[in-house]
Structure formats: structure tokens, C-alpha cells
Length: 208
Image (tube, rainbow, N blue to C red; front, top):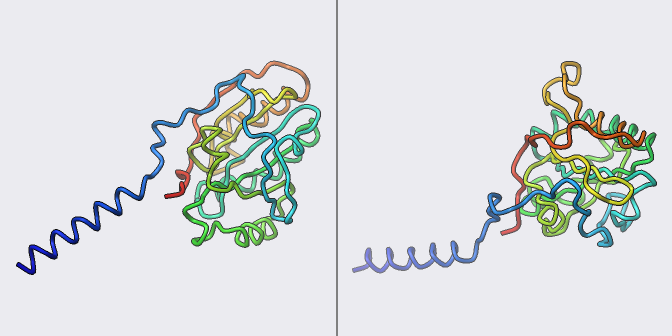
């Protein structure tokens, strides 16, 4: 009798837990289409400096580069040495840069605000690195991984989406510098030849 009661109680608790925990089904998320307007451009996010900024404020005369990133993903660590060079290239081409951390479920596991501040300082980030509260920005963009790149033009229309390049392991062995090419083309008012690529990285840690 005790075993039966224990089994029923455990089953109820599991059912309640599963009912309360509703992970995001990434198969239901839709990435922004090329040509789509950037969402949530007037929503304030908190940068590691403590400053509250919006995507609209970060954007420059030729557009905006948005990187969904984090502290804990090994894929981010592989590409991270290319963040600053791309941010500098974007700046040279009149494009603002911001990285957003959407890992809500990992705020107490290395992706909290103080962790972000430490990471930005250690890596010498030369761009905004802000908290994506409750992963709302990631949901709106249809971002599913870290890193996940979104590049917008001066009208805040999406012109490139996907990966930084085709080789996470070695910057020296990159054959397809997708983002670099897109930034340069955008800065010079030219057409972008490769508008999308597959984002490779860790799945975003959504709120439960």
C-alpha cells in the first residue's frame, strides 16, 4: 500500500513538474526572413556597463549587427576571437554592434549579469554586451543558437543571417567569411551575395 501511494504521489509530482516546465520548442521558432524589419528596436536592454540601450540607439548610419552570444557555450569560445575584428569592421563601415545574452535558464550557471561583465572585461569586448531578459529578443528574432548572427541595413531590414564564417576552429582556415563580406558589401552599398548560412552553436537556454 505504501509503495502504491508513493508511486502515485511521485507520478503526480512529475506530472505537475512537467506541466509547469514548458521548454521552448525551437522547431516552432521562425528565423527572421531576409528583408524583415528588426523587432523590438525600442526596447531597452542592460549593457555590461550598466547603461540601458536600445537597438535603435546602437545602430549607425549604415545599420546594425546583432550577435546572440553567451559565456558558457564552447562554440562561442571558438568564434569569440573574431568578435572584436568584426565589430571594428562594422564600425569602419558605419554599422553598430551589440551582443545579446539570451541564456535565461543559465543565469545562475555562468550567464548572469556579473558573469557577463567579467567576460566582457576579460575578452576586451569593444561592443555592447547586453542581457536579453527572459530571452524575449531571441524569440522575436527567431534565434536558436549561440552564436547566431543578424545584420541589418540602414532601414533596419535584415540583409544577412547565420554564422560568422565557415570555420569555427580556425580563423586562418576560413574559406567563406560570410559576415565580413556582408559587412563590407553593406558599407559600400553593394549587394550581398550570400544572405543566409546555417548557424552553428549551442542551443539557447530558454526560461522554464
